[in-house]
Length: 475
Image 1: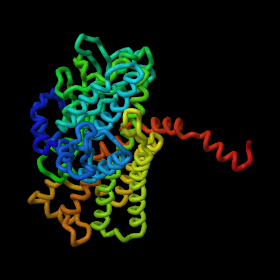
Image 2 (image 1 turned 180 degrees about the vertical axis):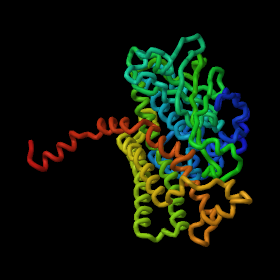
Image 3 (image 1 turned 135 degrees about the vertical axis):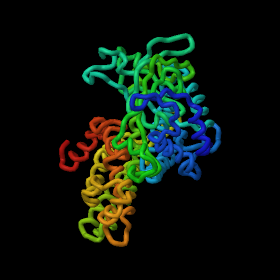
Image 4 (image 1 turned 90 degrees about the vertical axis):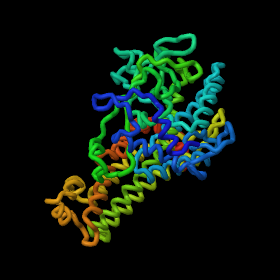
């Protein structure tokens, strides 16, 4: 397995075409806006030891990073949830490897199913790719979300056919694809891009039913960095005004400008009837992955308890009640994630799959809880969380003494200490950290209505009705 430094060095060898704020960026590793997100991924290499962060490859028998592992038991699914909470708490942000892990497991299932139905050889190709990913300990970016254009129309009906990533043409040694994937978390920190369909497809949409993997610096792949709240604070030097001093996340618009994909890297090519199953399985795996949000919730709860102490209100009954409620809500996320893992089952390929109903309940819960935790954190922290002076003001020889004097809470805690915690709360709930804690909780792995639809399909109301009718004597 790679060390942290070996991972960083591997990124330096990539030749990515990246644009940020209208300019080409040639060195992403040392760029102050990108570096915190790279540090978060690097933490998955730093901590890669023990049974939580590592696993035994079912292909080679070697010890591998769990982010490259194919689940071989319900215990693997449970350990995945534990790993994601651990990483969320350790970094306080998105560590960017969950979607790639979930895509690998999804393709392990789907390629086997397609081969069994169609007599193709996708699973063999996939296992070869998987072994490469495990042996080299690579980061994979799972690219699912298309631009979608006019939401009223299916892929083949769009005025611009590129609104969904699609096959442009076939060549003897591969395919050429065009389109884009949006909201690509950690794209600049990844070695491989795994593309999968974003929705169910019909016969007329078959050119859009495509899945493949390519090196992230493949010719024709263009990365356009997505802005985040307060992102230019990272350009101000080493200042606690960023909130989280060490880690961060990022998202990109990834463009595929007539990109060539060799056949050995193609895992679905026009098998449109399997797109729905792929999307459902990936969504369920990834909805389980939102155990990471209770890890981030751990950080926010810890910061909220700390600021309550610094403000001198930690023993006030309604504050204590709110802290208890924050813990109650946060732990239910973890309970749901564990439940869908424990109730998982083996698929024909041998890969273990989560309980889809419970995975959707996990994610639907996540669309609400972080927002409620943020609200209570704001209530306890006070309005100062959005009006606090900058670190530069604290350091200023003329006005610093006033900042130090008036930014104090309890006398025994220095103003700077209190300001640091306030900045962390601001960052998690309003600033750069809020990107992956709040909107990502809402829309990542599908927006709330997507979970409601799946819950409605899988809730088995007929069985519940039968139980009720039996008890009241209805035949």
